[in-house]
Image (cartoon, rainbow, N blue to C red):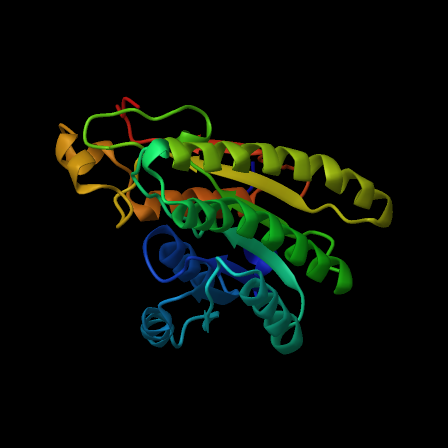
Length: 257
């Protein structure tokens, strides 16, 4: 299968949760591939520093501060992109939180924040991203919903704590992504062939991975690096337009959860 990101050169990508970890790496790699990348996160200072470090490359990073637990903030992000850069060709819904609290102990406000950040923001992002593609005649757009192996089973591992609520939110991402693909079939008559992918990594060495879990691993190589996940994302995007990778699960060799 021939893989190429060339058709996306000069076009616009939106990456949420782009200030660190997987989001920051994907944003960087898309810039290197020649895209205009809107990096969205609360910590705009990190985004600005990354934009400066990527200056002079084929593409560029546009830092945009937003709180993705707010509907108004999400709408502002997509309006800004449309008004200033034009239509979105690639959307990577990456932002997520993982509170390690048992469901009986959850504070209601924290529960609401988890559901909005991990589920509602993804759904709203898909809605607004597809609207941008339709409005601007971008018929070969691609949406990647960053999922997790936690979206396919309930994780229970020493050092990980209670991740049941996080698992539930990622199970919702699986259903959302599958349902979105079905809904997009109606656009095919208009020539729109928007691809949608659920990308599910196992444990990744980021700020989100609990220290206790990292210490429980017998080998540091039993957790993916952010570059591994970004490479998978670019593989998905670079596949031929007639190929839709609907679900891609990657884990470190020997990972046992």
